[in-house]
Amino acid sequence: MRTDRELHHFITEPNRFRILQVVLEHAEQLPTLYEITQFCPDLDREAVASHVEDLQAAEVLEAVELDPAERRAGYPHRFFGVTERGWRFLLAHGLADPDAVASGWEDVDVEDPEELARHESAPRPGDGERPGPVPTSRPSGGRLEEYMLVVEQSRDALYMLDADGRYVLVNAAYEDLTGYDRADLVGASTETVLDSADAAERRELIRDLLDEDTERRSHTLQSTLQTADGEPLPVEVKFSVLRFQDRLVGVVGSARDISGRRRRQQELSVLSRVLRHNLSNKVNVIQGYAEVIEDRLDETGPRDYAARIQSTAEKLIQQSEKARDIHDLLQAWPPELRAVDVTDVVGRCAAELEHAHPEATVATDLPELAWVSVPEEFERAVRELLRNGIEHAAREDPHVRVRVTDAPAEGAVTVEVADNGPGIPDHEKEVIATNEETPLSHSEGLGLWLVNWIVASADGDIAFAESDLGGSAVELRFPRAKPPALTLSM
Image: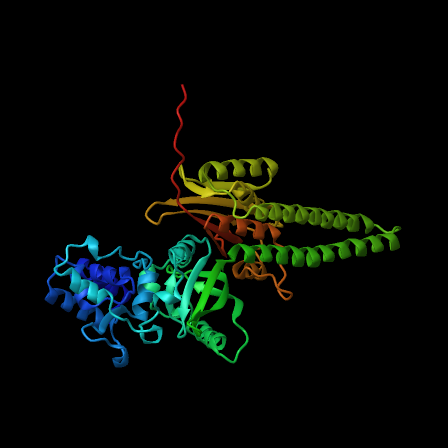
């Protein structure tokens, strides 16, 4: 059994492909061996017969005998047509042009025009005796070509599965979505892009849709594909049954990338949970201390309580501002990327931090240049990490160190921000790592969410570790980028 790649190479061998064209261009798409020979004048009868036998062995062509009751004396009764497997392969790989019917033998230099005319006028098998699919099942007048063009140029990823859950056809958008070549998908199981459990469920769904006793003929679901580079991709899949000659033979599916939708849902979930839970708690703190002040106006404690109220209110305002920044960032997701010099950005942010916090030590370890492609908000992410190291230090001598490493051999640039503070709580890191805010795992770190999304938009990664300064270390890793082209002006 040949692989799809091998079969493609086999079919497109010039002589075999010419024979297939003769079959496809025949008015009935069921020529006799004699007709095929006449339309391949550069091949002798033995060579044509050998190629036809090879195509039969590959299950691309099939010999069809006319019913004895319908045979006419002096006329041929053995013909050759494309098999169902052959049709599916030819259509899937764009090798078939079934509407380009031959203009006639009068344009061909044949040995015996009368003999060829007799072959062409021979009665052919009826639809039930033909190999399938056959011309009567396809749109006429060029409509099939138009349909295939629409499928191929559709922005949606479209594909066809047979009753066993194997790919029969995929379009270019599906290749782009999954990262797989068409030749690697056609004929393969959906396990190519799904894990075993999901593929088994998909086959069960197809069997259910194709069950004649089932009224359901379409289905929509959300799934996760494994792309050719091993990355999970959330998609929404829509199925509808494929009917051929009053039989249900497979399903047609469309897959659409919903990672943007998932990210939007995540944004709304995070903002809703964090704002509802954390801000509500802080408002309760404000209210509680306000009541204590009222009850103890004659004591010295009110000053401390007032300070706590002010601190909590400030945190409330900061979280609201960060929530707004996140909303603005994700409104235009994915943001436009531009090449920036990380050394320049980090150097400016560190200088600003030193000026705003003279009590703190801010150390830098920077290369001369380090270029990455990031959104405009990248500078906001750097400021957030540096400021966190100072504001959460809870000590008189806060110390922050930022190191930028350019690694051409690895194709990466890293930004590490370390501090001597109390460290990032484990539940904060867990929420960022899992990308999920749950009722049992609340995060006050809207700043970390903002940093995480900015890094993700640039195809970067974020990692947490313990700092040798005694606190926490956050590492941002980005793909290296080329510096922008210089523009000279006179």
